[in-house]
Amino acid sequence: MLSGLAVGAISGFVVALFRLFIEKLLDFMKFLYSHPTPGIVIAIVVVSIVAGIFIGFLMKQEPNISGSGIPQIEGQLRGEMEFNWWGILWRKFVAGVIGIGSGLFLGREGPSIQLGASVGQGYADLSHQEGASRRVMIAAGSAAGLSAAFNAPIAGTMFVLEEIYHNFSPMVWITSLASAIAADIISLRFFGLTPVLHLVYVRSMPLPLYWHLLALGIILGLLGMFYSKVTLAMPQLYSYTRIPRAFQGLIPLLLVIPLGLAMPQILGGGNSIILSIGHTLPALPLLLLILAIRFAFSFISYGSGLPGGIFLPILSLGAVIGAAYGVFMNSLGLLPHEYILNLMIFAMAGYFAGIGKAPFTAILLITEMVGSLHILLPLAILSLTAFAVTDLLGGAPIYEALLSRLVLPTQIGRLHDAQRFELPVFAGSQLDMSSVRDYEWPTDSLLVEIRRGDERRIPHGDSVIRAGDTLIIMTDNAHLKHVRSMIERATTLPD
Image (tube, rainbow, N blue to C red):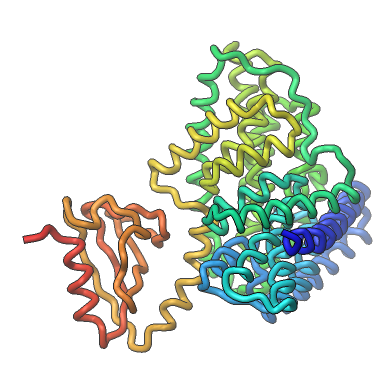
């Protein structure tokens, strides 16, 4: 536990500085966009190009600072990836401040988690800890990173257990909780005791109106599937630009300039948007416009590979969806005006639960960020509804799907003489209605794709294999006959 406290304190300081620099730079950029002159606009364009090139060189030196960093940590804790903690730490810090502080629709939480994990790894390496102890330090640093980013120590701990480490052992959760609390205390010294999303929860929603939670949960689940599919498709869309991957961040850094000149108040990960809508509710047309812009530019920002997260952008999208739903229902006379804010708060948790498939984290995070315990039951109902919709539709946890994209090329590269074969899955076979993780795949085999009709899916641990699917499998030529016969027994009915 003492090691967890030390990792948490160091991580809290690093992440608090990271968060502070981003806020100061973002405020400065909003000021410039609010007072434009030809000289200021030209300067922003030039600086944005230089910043994009500079971040590109950092990403070429260390590609694993790309994106949120959460899939990379999951891969590291599974033993599938390994990093130079110092190279990640300083490059992620610098590139994250520049990219997020410029006004892009990127969150600070993913990079904060990776910064914390790097501190945890560095602490373990410098104190000569190995194996399980080293992994616990990395997990503790991750919890500290999220805790310091959102002042949410309980949610930070739960996120590590539910989404990253997938282990509820006492050593993991006690060390992670100690680390998260230490980081939160350090962060509070920088930013005070006011919750990150200080929305005043005026009145509890009466039970006869709870049907709105189910209806909104279904909408959030469907829109969550849309968000996941487009997010996963963005790297392929960016490849058509012919710009090297490390320098594709130039596109959003330049596209944000006209957006900043037109609507400077909408820039950033979304924290200010949530607070603004919570205090002064816009009309439905403006809410729909904000929703469309935030959807489109969130995809553009994150899809470029720039260091930055999707955690806060997801929460902000959920808030706007909840507000738009509430205003629409109020116009129909089906929802009193005073409960619109309630749905806005609940929708943040529901949208994250549907996309991240981490409902416990979603519930605890919004509870801590808003600062009220009276919202637990409706939060749980809405989050579980959105989760169930995406689960029924076969949606994958977004971070696990992103991890699959990262490790697949490495796994294929380990095959010396790779051969590919296809096997259909028959009804009633061993693999019919089984999760990928529930089957013990033969050594030297790799399930690379599941075809379902015209749909092609990159598999992950929670993917459910169904009768009628075609499995695309790769293995070494030397093991082809053995691997094929073993998996074929699992895809066909026994004699």
